[in-house]
Length: 360
Image 1 (cartoon, rainbow, N blue to C red):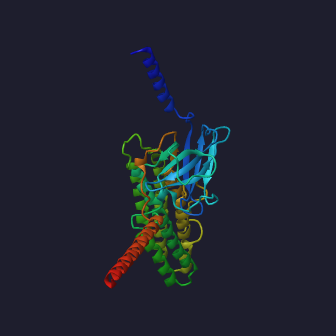
Image 2: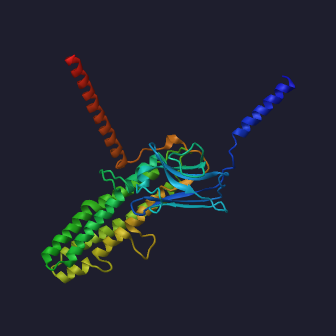
Image 3: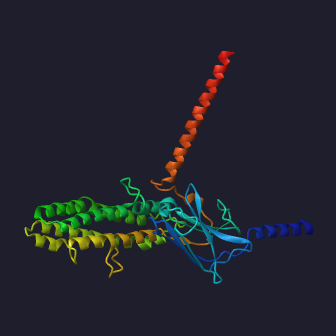
């Protein structure tokens, strides 16, 4: 091979090598955590450090992604120290109010031209994170869609059931005759035995299943699931204990004939039916590890923490939104309407043409 040809080959290889190097060194990492704002799991906070700022004339834009769509959560600003602190909630112009865990399982940050946020992300993905498909299905059962068809999730169902029992206990406390008190106490017992305890078991099963779903695939990140599922189960264990204590007190209160003795067990007040049910719903203010259903919700959301790194998005790991996503039925209805209108218009055109042919 001549020296000229060799030189040309070296230059060509060098150009190929340079073209594969990104415009700037991608560095930094962080997390994105979903939380409640005006609705359930409708806000997300991105926190990162060591981030290299975008190139001149460019900006970072955050997106949440599912198998069907990608939506922006706004411009991701980087401060002089390379830190990111970005919150997308009801005060954001792009806020949708959707349950973000129900609808998405990936987060990406792309580099875009400065100015308006585009309607869809560019292919220049700088950072990404994915909640594993095998785990997100179980986390969604906890926070957005339960096995009985509810679109609120097991934990919201559990809190609603505790509230039903609490309302009956409050009515018992306000009643003045033993027979009426006993009727309300039976409602407490029936709600706990018929709903609360079984729903609590479903919550434990879902959290455990999310952790057990780890496939061993090194490209899946189960770190957040493994770190937080036990906290969910700990909260559920507390709730089960409090609900059982409330049930036992209701049984004991019904066995008493004296109204004042019944009400002493009903509450309000420490160690009463009303107090135990309140603890189950919202926790104990003096114990951070005993957050009730509210604490279980936070821990479940932490199971779905995005661990952001400088890697491209693997589109094959995207999932469809969970059942209960109301945007899908709306789109489907619109499609049916358009199809129905097309049939009517087409039929009318055919009919007109036949009419013209016959008259001719």
